[in-house]
Length: 188
Image (cartoon, rainbow, N blue to C red; front, side, top):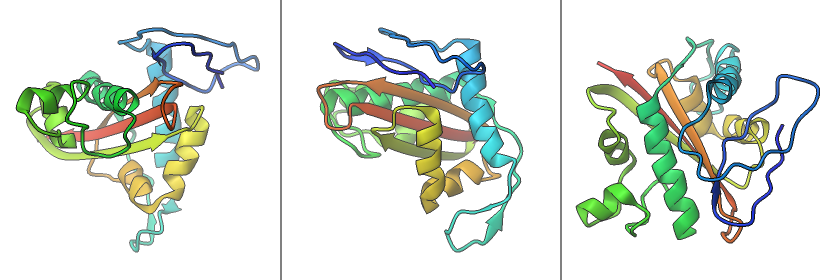
């Protein structure tokens, strides 16, 4: 688990370390995640998908589900939304409609999650989903919270999805300070 140090708006991707030691990292303006970071988030998501669980959504036991693969386009849309939430200090699946909601601002309205996904190059999809969270300091905490929420758990466990992209943006001057977006998709 990595700790976060912030003094300005920073973008960071938090992950559970593979070793016993957990370094402290400050990352500024990170637009692309490294392969190890992608690997760690995929590991956490796919570990959850590999288990049978009850999401308490009325569907009973689900899973295990096939492992997801990383999508740079879904990551880009997740990054756009987490950045918007952090900059506008809002918390919604709808974009803020401000300049930080790039897709919505370009269209003159608040963006919808599927519009952000399409605008970031994920086209020809069969299924889409989005989870957001705020305030969790690491991937372990956010995954725990998502898995305890019926709708979020259902997205994580859905066999309709084959790809994922996750981003987190930190703004210490905002309500939640840490904003997570997890976008799911499957192509036709």
